[in-house]
Image (cartoon, rainbow, N blue to C red; front, side, top):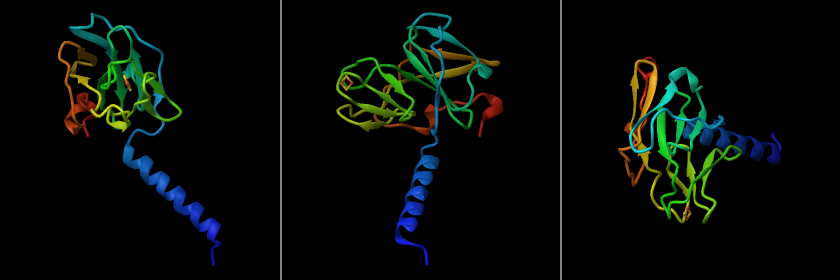
Length: 160
Ligand code: FES
């Protein structure tokens, strides 16, 4: 018979794996800041699809967004302002989450609230593709009460 401590260890390990698999954002790597071609308020060119490896978060401070590339190839451009009182967010790689230094709100990599006082998911910008080029329309902010699957967009070869 398995000792109780071993049994509990395995249960916790299993729960951790299940939670990690469910989130879909395990181990996102933070890439160096990039400069987009174009100005905030318009359509900016983030780069080529292959510039953004799977499971990465790339900050574009001048264009005011983070470009998240999921493990399934999908892209999401999140506005870098907290939905509480609009402080600029930081990415905390150790916890795989966005963190607000002002009052401690935390957000998952898809923008949903993980810790208040913020109550709304992070806003995002439409992402589109021109061939293999990733475009982000920073003039069309999408405010979200909750995260929708349609917020993630895929280059044609990566569509699930
Ligand atoms: S502005 Fe982000 S938690 Fe208050």
